[in-house]
Amino acid sequence: MWVLFFQSLEQLVHPTNAALMFGGVLLGLVFGSLPGLSTTMAVALMLPLTFVFTPTIGISMLVAIYVGGISGSCVSAILLRIPGTAASIATTFDGFPLAQQGQPIRALGTAMLASFFGGIIGLGILITSAPLVAGLAIRFGPFEYAALAFTALTLVGTLSSGSILKGLVAACFGLTLSLIGIAPIDAHARYTFGIQSMIGGLAVVPFLIGLYAVPQLILQVGQRDRPEVNLDLAVRGFGVSLSDIRRNIINIIRSALIGMGIGSLPGIGSAAANLVAYGVAKQASKTPEKFGTGTTEGIWAPETANNASVAGALLPLITLGIPGGGVTAVLLGGFTIHNIQPGPLLYSTNPSAIASIYAAFLFAAVLVLLTQLFTIRIFPRVLKTPRQFLIPAIFMITVTGVYISDYRVFDIFVMFGIGCIGFAFERYRFPLAPVVLGFVIGPILEINLRRSLMLSQGDWAPFVTNPISATFLVLAMVAILFGALRNYRRA
Image (cartoon, helix red, strand yellow):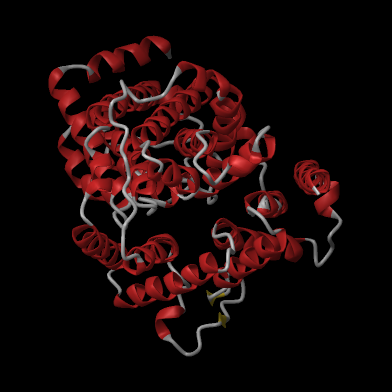
């Protein structure tokens, strides 16, 4: 395998192939950084074009777009508080405050290095233990998924800065919004109020952009005098010190493992990995009160996790032939175009294809890092843009991004409706993070809980008799008790 890996890497560094890989990375970075333009869309656009290339180059380009798309989503999340994709939701929590403190390069540099480290650690796990992890992932059924979703929801207290009660209210609001549309089991329409466009539920893109971008726009319009942001651009490299990296080594490794683990579970996604890693990092931190104020701990964790989840998502695709999400489903189509059948037999029938995927992942991660190094001083200048130009530009980007995500005018109204609610939440100091957590985790919890109870005929006992689900429930109880004990000590 290692011989094939280095042969594939040697093939990719050829000038022509490297240029194609760079084009894929650049396309991914652009689509990832612009709200509404998803990584799935970028991979789907390039899919037919890869037919003219060899299987190695064609698949490598698609992997490069995937890696670039997830890595690029941090830019708008940090500078504008608008997640480029759902994978960078938690990056806004500390990335945006740090940028507003005049340190956008440090915030971006931390996110970019975290993306690189997360990708490399995830790739290492993918190469060394893919069959083992895939065997564990295949054992996840409805009971395990439901228990995992419940465990993720216990992070509400951690993500609630201040009042836990307000955090619970926010999480319940997010859960309620996730119930809109057709029920997953009996296909019964819920909370649609007779509106045909709501039958499919609320889409993620207008929900996220509305929750984070619209309140910021309302706030900017309401400010007569925009506070001056003194940008610290006189920093070298990524603006990240070695001491900061050393302090976050455990945070980086832990977040990469979380991202890899959650990413390898089909249907969960990098958004959940992003939020869970942030919540766990805050729980484990010696200074949790700094989270949400611009601490780099809160940037290292989510960005490491969401890029490790890319390797995690590739794991079931390669070893089992099961796509874990939208991007990997399109990648599966790419494999089919190039006559590659992913699954357990791929390791014996076509090991060179696996080696080329691994090599493409590594080469793309390096290209992304180098590209970001040369552009890191360009992006922060958006913070110096006069307000009379910045606000209309953000407005146009958000409206256009929401519309082209699904080509529905209704989504624009959803964005503004959710945005007004988000502004009210912030006005009365209700945290937004639990809203997102409830909205993202809600569908996963509901469908798997209902499937579990159908399989057990209403019996709850399998949740505690099944080893994996029981482990998750124990972790959930420990997290709840740990949070309660910490709040008691603070009081």
